[in-house]
Length: 93
Image 1 (tube, one colour):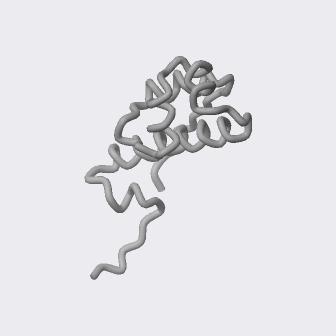
Image 2: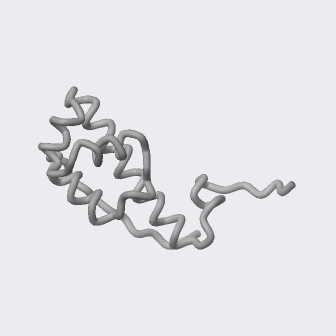
Image 3: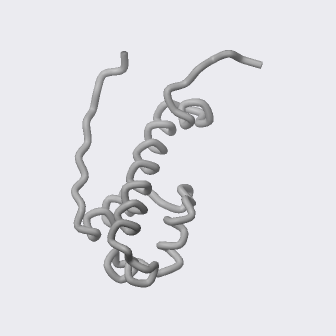
């Protein structure tokens, strides 16, 4: 058993640093969308109409099925929800 520590679960389970970064971005967008939908009190059907997707797609989002969502799709959904995305690029320490 290793005593290695990681900043993120994605750093621990993904094969490459690029895959881990992609998953961190996707999970952050998914959590923001889920929180926004809950704050607004939207049903999954209402959220689907507002986000321009199907209700089963919203269900996948709310269930955290991250493997079903790419960054482009999530950014489009965030914008459709009336939210804004900002990104920072930092040098690795």
